[in-house]
Image 1 (cartoon, one colour):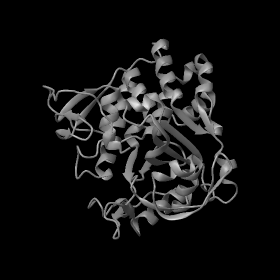
Image 2 (spheres, helix red, strand yellow):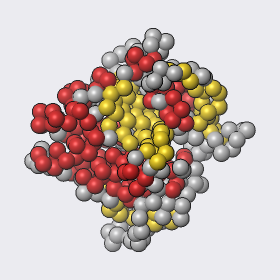
Image 3 (cartoon, rainbow, N blue to C red):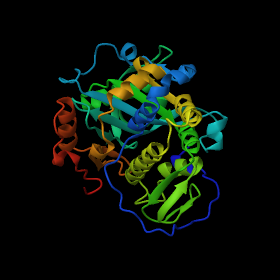
Image 4 (cartoon, rainbow, N blue to C red):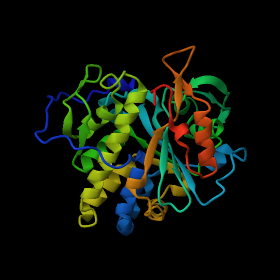
Length: 359
Protein backbone atom coordinates (compact mmCIF):
# COMPACT_ATOMS: atom_id res chain seq x y z
CA UNK A 1 0.00 0.00 0.00
CA UNK A 2 1.18 3.48 -0.79
CA UNK A 3 2.25 5.71 2.06
CA UNK A 4 -0.18 8.28 0.71
CA UNK A 5 -3.15 6.22 1.82
CA UNK A 6 -2.79 6.38 5.61
CA UNK A 7 -6.02 7.91 6.89
CA UNK A 8 -5.49 10.29 9.79
CA UNK A 9 -9.21 10.52 10.50
CA UNK A 10 -11.49 13.50 9.92
CA UNK A 11 -10.21 16.77 11.21
CA UNK A 12 -11.23 20.31 10.39
CA UNK A 13 -8.56 22.75 9.28
CA UNK A 14 -7.61 25.24 11.90
CA UNK A 15 -5.29 28.20 12.16
CA UNK A 16 -3.62 29.25 15.37
CA UNK A 17 -4.05 32.85 16.43
CA UNK A 18 -0.40 33.32 17.23
CA UNK A 19 1.93 34.44 14.43
CA UNK A 20 4.22 31.86 12.91
CA UNK A 21 7.56 31.53 14.60
CA UNK A 22 10.66 31.22 12.54
CA UNK A 23 12.09 27.73 12.79
CA UNK A 24 15.42 27.89 14.58
CA UNK A 25 18.35 25.53 14.79
CA UNK A 26 19.10 22.54 12.64
CA UNK A 27 16.99 19.47 12.20
CA UNK A 28 17.28 16.18 14.04
CA UNK A 29 16.71 12.60 12.94
CA UNK A 30 14.48 9.90 14.24
CA UNK A 31 17.32 7.72 15.47
CA UNK A 32 19.04 10.51 17.38
CA UNK A 33 15.66 11.48 18.80
CA UNK A 34 15.19 7.98 20.21
CA UNK A 35 18.68 7.89 21.63
CA UNK A 36 18.28 11.28 23.28
CA UNK A 37 14.83 10.30 24.50
CA UNK A 38 16.27 7.33 26.35
CA UNK A 39 19.19 9.45 27.51
CA UNK A 40 16.72 11.86 29.11
CA UNK A 41 15.54 9.01 31.29
CA UNK A 42 19.01 7.49 31.45
CA UNK A 43 19.40 8.06 35.17
CA UNK A 44 16.23 6.02 35.67
CA UNK A 45 17.03 3.18 33.33
CA UNK A 46 17.23 0.68 36.13
CA UNK A 47 13.48 1.19 36.55
CA UNK A 48 12.98 0.00 33.00
CA UNK A 49 14.95 -3.25 33.14
CA UNK A 50 11.72 -5.13 32.48
CA UNK A 51 11.48 -3.30 29.13
CA UNK A 52 14.64 -4.96 27.79
CA UNK A 53 12.57 -7.71 26.23
CA UNK A 54 10.67 -5.16 24.14
CA UNK A 55 13.74 -4.25 22.08
CA UNK A 56 14.35 -6.55 19.14
CA UNK A 57 17.94 -7.15 18.00
CA UNK A 58 19.50 -7.84 14.59
CA UNK A 59 22.98 -9.40 14.46
CA UNK A 60 24.37 -7.24 11.65
CA UNK A 61 27.95 -8.48 11.97
CA UNK A 62 26.94 -12.14 11.63
CA UNK A 63 24.64 -11.43 8.70
CA UNK A 64 27.16 -9.37 6.72
CA UNK A 65 30.38 -11.25 7.46
CA UNK A 66 33.81 -9.79 6.73
CA UNK A 67 33.17 -8.18 3.33
CA UNK A 68 32.44 -4.72 4.69
CA UNK A 69 33.93 -1.22 4.50
CA UNK A 70 36.66 -0.24 6.92
CA UNK A 71 35.67 1.39 10.18
CA UNK A 72 36.22 5.12 10.54
CA UNK A 73 39.86 6.13 11.09
CA UNK A 74 38.69 8.00 14.21
CA UNK A 75 36.42 7.31 17.18
CA UNK A 76 33.44 8.60 15.20
CA UNK A 77 30.31 6.50 14.70
CA UNK A 78 27.81 5.88 11.89
CA UNK A 79 24.20 4.85 12.51
CA UNK A 80 21.64 3.68 9.98
CA UNK A 81 18.19 4.78 11.11
CA UNK A 82 15.06 3.34 9.49
CA UNK A 83 11.40 4.19 9.88
CA UNK A 84 9.65 1.04 8.69
CA UNK A 85 6.23 1.03 7.08
CA UNK A 86 4.92 -2.29 8.40
CA UNK A 87 1.90 -3.72 6.61
CA UNK A 88 1.20 -6.56 9.01
CA UNK A 89 -0.97 -6.71 12.11
CA UNK A 90 -4.17 -5.14 13.35
CA UNK A 91 -2.50 -1.93 14.50
CA UNK A 92 -1.15 -1.27 11.01
CA UNK A 93 -4.47 -2.14 9.41
CA UNK A 94 -5.99 0.62 11.53
CA UNK A 95 -3.32 2.99 10.24
CA UNK A 96 -3.94 2.06 6.64
CA UNK A 97 -0.93 -0.21 6.41
CA UNK A 98 -2.76 -3.26 5.11
CA UNK A 99 -3.12 -5.44 8.19
CA UNK A 100 -3.32 -8.78 6.38
CA UNK A 101 -0.28 -8.07 4.21
CA UNK A 102 3.06 -9.35 5.43
CA UNK A 103 6.36 -7.52 5.21
CA UNK A 104 7.41 -3.92 5.50
CA UNK A 105 9.28 -1.20 3.65
CA UNK A 106 12.00 1.15 4.87
CA UNK A 107 9.94 4.28 4.39
CA UNK A 108 12.43 6.63 6.03
CA UNK A 109 16.20 6.06 5.96
CA UNK A 110 18.97 8.21 7.38
CA UNK A 111 22.70 7.67 7.83
CA UNK A 112 23.62 9.54 11.00
CA UNK A 113 27.32 10.41 11.21
CA UNK A 114 28.70 11.38 14.61
CA UNK A 115 32.25 12.73 14.18
CA UNK A 116 35.09 12.18 16.60
CA UNK A 117 34.46 13.97 19.86
CA UNK A 118 30.68 13.42 19.63
CA UNK A 119 29.89 17.11 19.94
CA UNK A 120 27.89 17.35 16.71
CA UNK A 121 26.20 15.15 14.14
CA UNK A 122 25.01 15.13 10.55
CA UNK A 123 22.26 12.97 9.07
CA UNK A 124 21.96 12.05 5.40
CA UNK A 125 18.41 11.22 4.30
CA UNK A 126 18.19 8.66 1.48
CA UNK A 127 15.04 9.19 -0.63
CA UNK A 128 12.91 6.04 -0.72
CA UNK A 129 12.53 6.26 -4.52
CA UNK A 130 16.29 6.17 -5.11
CA UNK A 131 17.33 3.48 -7.59
CA UNK A 132 20.18 1.40 -6.16
CA UNK A 133 22.02 -1.85 -6.80
CA UNK A 134 20.95 -4.43 -4.24
CA UNK A 135 23.84 -6.81 -3.46
CA UNK A 136 23.36 -10.52 -2.94
CA UNK A 137 22.03 -11.00 0.58
CA UNK A 138 21.24 -13.81 2.99
CA UNK A 139 17.83 -13.55 4.66
CA UNK A 140 17.03 -14.45 8.26
CA UNK A 141 15.80 -17.88 7.19
CA UNK A 142 19.13 -18.66 5.50
CA UNK A 143 17.88 -18.30 1.93
CA UNK A 144 19.80 -16.16 -0.55
CA UNK A 145 18.41 -13.18 -2.45
CA UNK A 146 20.27 -12.54 -5.69
CA UNK A 147 21.76 -9.14 -6.36
CA UNK A 148 19.87 -6.86 -8.73
CA UNK A 149 20.41 -3.45 -10.33
CA UNK A 150 17.95 -0.56 -10.45
CA UNK A 151 15.70 -1.49 -7.54
CA UNK A 152 13.95 1.07 -5.35
CA UNK A 153 15.80 1.60 -2.12
CA UNK A 154 12.73 1.16 0.07
CA UNK A 155 12.00 -2.24 -1.53
CA UNK A 156 15.19 -3.84 -0.18
CA UNK A 157 13.75 -4.24 3.31
CA UNK A 158 10.70 -6.16 2.11
CA UNK A 159 12.69 -8.31 -0.30
CA UNK A 160 15.64 -9.26 1.87
CA UNK A 161 15.33 -7.84 5.40
CA UNK A 162 17.11 -5.19 7.49
CA UNK A 163 20.60 -6.67 7.24
CA UNK A 164 20.38 -6.35 3.46
CA UNK A 165 19.43 -2.68 3.84
CA UNK A 166 22.61 -2.18 5.84
CA UNK A 167 24.61 -4.05 3.19
CA UNK A 168 23.04 -1.99 0.39
CA UNK A 169 23.90 1.27 2.17
CA UNK A 170 27.47 0.11 2.78
CA UNK A 171 27.90 -0.91 -0.87
CA UNK A 172 26.49 2.33 -2.29
CA UNK A 173 28.40 4.59 0.10
CA UNK A 174 31.53 2.74 1.20
CA UNK A 175 30.56 3.83 4.73
CA UNK A 176 30.76 1.28 7.56
CA UNK A 177 27.51 1.15 9.57
CA UNK A 178 28.37 0.76 13.26
CA UNK A 179 24.82 0.66 14.61
CA UNK A 180 21.30 0.11 13.33
CA UNK A 181 18.06 1.61 14.70
CA UNK A 182 14.54 1.01 13.41
CA UNK A 183 11.10 2.14 14.58
CA UNK A 184 7.85 1.05 12.97
CA UNK A 185 5.21 3.66 12.24
CA UNK A 186 2.60 2.12 14.53
CA UNK A 187 5.08 2.66 17.37
CA UNK A 188 5.74 6.19 16.13
CA UNK A 189 2.03 6.99 16.53
CA UNK A 190 1.98 5.56 20.05
CA UNK A 191 5.10 7.53 21.01
CA UNK A 192 3.50 10.82 19.95
CA UNK A 193 0.32 10.01 21.88
CA UNK A 194 2.38 9.03 24.94
CA UNK A 195 3.91 12.52 25.14
CA UNK A 196 0.56 14.22 24.60
CA UNK A 197 0.92 15.33 20.99
CA UNK A 198 3.40 17.53 19.12
CA UNK A 199 3.04 21.12 17.93
CA UNK A 200 4.44 21.79 14.46
CA UNK A 201 4.57 24.97 12.40
CA UNK A 202 2.85 23.78 9.22
CA UNK A 203 4.66 25.58 6.36
CA UNK A 204 1.62 25.82 4.07
CA UNK A 205 -2.00 24.71 3.85
CA UNK A 206 -2.17 20.94 3.37
CA UNK A 207 -5.16 19.43 1.60
CA UNK A 208 -4.24 15.83 0.87
CA UNK A 209 -7.32 14.08 -0.50
CA UNK A 210 -5.39 10.80 -0.78
CA UNK A 211 -4.81 10.55 2.97
CA UNK A 212 -7.55 12.84 4.25
CA UNK A 213 -5.04 15.15 5.94
CA UNK A 214 -6.27 18.74 6.05
CA UNK A 215 -4.26 21.34 7.97
CA UNK A 216 -4.05 25.10 7.77
CA UNK A 217 -0.66 26.80 7.71
CA UNK A 218 0.67 27.84 11.09
CA UNK A 219 1.24 26.20 14.49
CA UNK A 220 -0.88 23.06 14.93
CA UNK A 221 -0.88 20.45 17.69
CA UNK A 222 -1.07 16.97 16.18
CA UNK A 223 -1.94 13.68 17.85
CA UNK A 224 -0.29 10.40 16.91
CA UNK A 225 -2.53 9.56 13.95
CA UNK A 226 -2.28 13.07 12.52
CA UNK A 227 1.48 13.13 13.07
CA UNK A 228 1.87 9.87 11.18
CA UNK A 229 -0.17 11.25 8.28
CA UNK A 230 1.89 14.46 8.36
CA UNK A 231 5.26 12.72 7.97
CA UNK A 232 3.87 10.40 5.30
CA UNK A 233 1.93 12.87 3.16
CA UNK A 234 3.19 13.33 -0.39
CA UNK A 235 0.35 14.93 -2.35
CA UNK A 236 -0.21 17.52 0.35
CA UNK A 237 3.13 19.31 -0.04
CA UNK A 238 5.44 20.52 -2.81
CA UNK A 239 5.37 18.61 -6.10
CA UNK A 240 3.95 15.45 -4.56
CA UNK A 241 7.27 13.63 -4.59
CA UNK A 242 9.18 11.95 -1.78
CA UNK A 243 11.72 14.78 -1.85
CA UNK A 244 9.22 17.28 -0.44
CA UNK A 245 8.10 14.84 2.23
CA UNK A 246 11.65 14.49 3.56
CA UNK A 247 11.57 18.15 4.59
CA UNK A 248 8.35 17.61 6.56
CA UNK A 249 9.79 14.57 8.31
CA UNK A 250 12.89 16.45 9.38
CA UNK A 251 10.86 19.42 10.61
CA UNK A 252 8.46 17.23 12.56
CA UNK A 253 11.19 15.26 14.28
CA UNK A 254 12.79 18.47 15.54
CA UNK A 255 9.42 19.49 16.97
CA UNK A 256 9.04 16.05 18.57
CA UNK A 257 12.44 16.34 20.26
CA UNK A 258 11.55 19.81 21.54
CA UNK A 259 8.32 18.46 23.02
CA UNK A 260 10.14 15.61 24.80
CA UNK A 261 12.76 18.00 26.19
CA UNK A 262 10.08 20.39 27.45
CA UNK A 263 8.51 17.71 29.64
CA UNK A 264 9.76 16.96 33.15
CA UNK A 265 10.48 13.29 32.52
CA UNK A 266 12.86 12.96 35.45
CA UNK A 267 10.22 14.45 37.72
CA UNK A 268 7.56 12.05 36.47
CA UNK A 269 8.73 8.41 36.55
CA UNK A 270 5.26 7.20 35.49
CA UNK A 271 5.29 9.39 32.38
CA UNK A 272 8.89 8.42 31.66
CA UNK A 273 7.94 4.76 31.87
CA UNK A 274 4.99 5.25 29.51
CA UNK A 275 7.17 6.98 26.92
CA UNK A 276 9.98 4.44 27.26
CA UNK A 277 7.48 1.61 26.87
CA UNK A 278 6.10 3.14 23.66
CA UNK A 279 9.59 3.62 22.28
CA UNK A 280 10.97 0.18 23.14
CA UNK A 281 7.93 -1.76 21.94
CA UNK A 282 8.49 -0.49 18.41
CA UNK A 283 12.30 -0.43 18.43
CA UNK A 284 14.73 -2.74 16.66
CA UNK A 285 18.50 -2.26 16.95
CA UNK A 286 21.69 -4.09 16.14
CA UNK A 287 22.42 -6.78 18.71
CA UNK A 288 25.05 -4.70 20.53
CA UNK A 289 22.40 -2.10 21.44
CA UNK A 290 19.47 -4.46 22.00
CA UNK A 291 19.04 -3.79 25.70
CA UNK A 292 17.91 -0.71 27.57
CA UNK A 293 21.19 -0.64 29.49
CA UNK A 294 23.32 -0.71 26.33
CA UNK A 295 21.12 1.86 24.62
CA UNK A 296 21.22 4.17 27.64
CA UNK A 297 25.01 3.86 27.86
CA UNK A 298 25.32 4.72 24.18
CA UNK A 299 22.96 7.65 24.69
CA UNK A 300 25.05 8.99 27.56
CA UNK A 301 28.12 8.84 25.33
CA UNK A 302 26.28 11.25 23.01
CA UNK A 303 25.39 13.78 25.68
CA UNK A 304 27.76 16.27 24.05
CA UNK A 305 25.72 16.31 20.82
CA UNK A 306 23.83 19.60 20.88
CA UNK A 307 20.73 19.59 18.66
CA UNK A 308 21.58 23.18 17.71
CA UNK A 309 24.81 21.95 16.14
CA UNK A 310 23.19 19.15 14.16
CA UNK A 311 22.68 19.19 10.43
CA UNK A 312 20.31 17.17 8.27
CA UNK A 313 20.81 17.02 4.53
CA UNK A 314 19.45 14.91 1.70
CA UNK A 315 21.56 12.61 -0.42
CA UNK A 316 22.19 14.56 -3.64
CA UNK A 317 19.98 13.00 -6.30
CA UNK A 318 18.91 13.63 -9.88
CA UNK A 319 15.84 12.39 -11.73
CA UNK A 320 16.45 9.14 -13.57
CA UNK A 321 16.54 9.58 -17.36
CA UNK A 322 14.76 6.28 -18.01
CA UNK A 323 12.09 6.59 -15.32
CA UNK A 324 11.48 10.23 -14.28
CA UNK A 325 9.42 8.99 -11.32
CA UNK A 326 12.62 7.69 -9.74
CA UNK A 327 15.87 9.34 -8.68
CA UNK A 328 19.51 8.25 -8.73
CA UNK A 329 22.48 9.38 -6.66
CA UNK A 330 24.00 12.44 -8.32
CA UNK A 331 27.72 12.57 -9.06
CA UNK A 332 30.14 13.98 -8.13
CA UNK A 333 28.14 15.35 -5.18
CA UNK A 334 27.15 12.05 -3.57
CA UNK A 335 30.67 10.66 -3.96
CA UNK A 336 32.10 13.74 -2.23
CA UNK A 337 29.54 13.41 0.56
CA UNK A 338 30.26 9.76 1.31
CA UNK A 339 34.03 10.36 1.07
CA UNK A 340 33.84 13.08 3.72
CA UNK A 341 31.90 10.74 6.04
CA UNK A 342 34.33 7.85 5.46
CA UNK A 343 37.25 10.10 6.35
CA UNK A 344 35.40 11.82 9.22
CA UNK A 345 36.06 15.25 7.72
CA UNK A 346 33.91 18.32 7.04
CA UNK A 347 31.36 17.80 4.29
CA UNK A 348 31.97 20.35 1.49
CA UNK A 349 29.03 22.61 0.61
CA UNK A 350 29.14 21.41 -2.99
CA UNK A 351 28.41 17.87 -1.80
CA UNK A 352 25.09 18.99 -0.29
CA UNK A 353 23.57 20.27 -3.53
CA UNK A 354 20.89 18.11 -5.14
CA UNK A 355 20.03 18.63 -8.84
CA UNK A 356 16.56 17.15 -8.30
CA UNK A 357 15.60 19.96 -5.93
CA UNK A 358 17.60 22.70 -7.60
CA UNK A 359 19.59 23.15 -4.40
